[in-house]
Image (cartoon, rainbow, N blue to C red; front, side, top):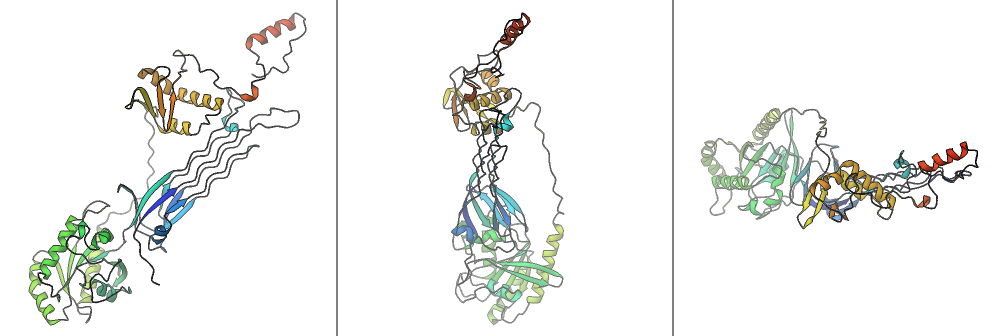
Length: 485
């Protein structure tokens, strides 16, 4: 059974989620609270699109459009970090273009090994060992892992060919590519025998180039008629476009000049997704089937009119092989000239863009749906909220401290927010309780640690009183177990 050609596919990708961090306390004999030792969660795996020369169609994505990378493992006690999720590598043909569902081009994958990160894996959450600091020596919480990115993308294959053959159905394009290369397309005496683009490699002296046979065009192809619209994308990269004209057709109202005009009209109305247009590509007109006497006579009659337009014209016959050598070398010259005109590939440059001095990393704006509400936008606060376990008071307090240090609360106060105002950060919505010094008192219960709730804390005044008692010779206060600070 012949393989099926698919040059467009819609895929649904899901990167791996990051593993949760671990909240653990080191325990051993005589050390009931030996310090935090929770490990970090592993990062989620990415979904990568990689150009593979051995892949020539998007058929696999047509039958298996859903793909998911591995998720990271959670951290564990004993400072053991979770394993990272497995990266998923999807192999695509050379010339694959990645687009959004709205048609925005995200990547043009050309060249073996070219890689595009189609979906980014989520970050792993930090364990409480990594969150420990002088102010918070024994965190009773850890950060959650982030969800992996989920995306719906469109893959379109645009053939990487130097020469594109265009023409009406049954003009002889498939026959031409079959005699100039080793390609074996389907050839028959009825229209639209070519249902998929055919690629062939042609040698002209020292020049080697590829040739693409595009399914037959008819008037209105740029608007979706026939098969041309689906396959015009395969000529977007071509260095030269060849109009293959059937000089032996007996269809009423058709002649070589009108056929060229019709093809040019469709090319002018087609808008390449990769930008630019096709008007600047060199054109070559091939008058085919001159082995038929009437066709040879017609070709001789219209040749001067076509050359007067600045077109190079070749009279050929794929049956008798007449004129093929001259055509092959002429196409080789045009391809070489086009390649020489291309700018030299510049080495990849890494551009470092430091953050502006006045860039706070977030913005605060009024909520259009709630006159008294506010929306905080920015990658850092949105990520911090996603990583917070809201069932843990200490984790919530840690989030509030981070937002405070970033300046979110100060900006909210400057914008006129009042206690109880609705504040949205990412997908979460909160009742704002300010804690910025000089604005409002601290939120009650912030930073509490359930493990220490039953342990009394020693304040500075307690220690001062204990030192006074010792100096006076009185029994020392029982402070042995009150070392929570």
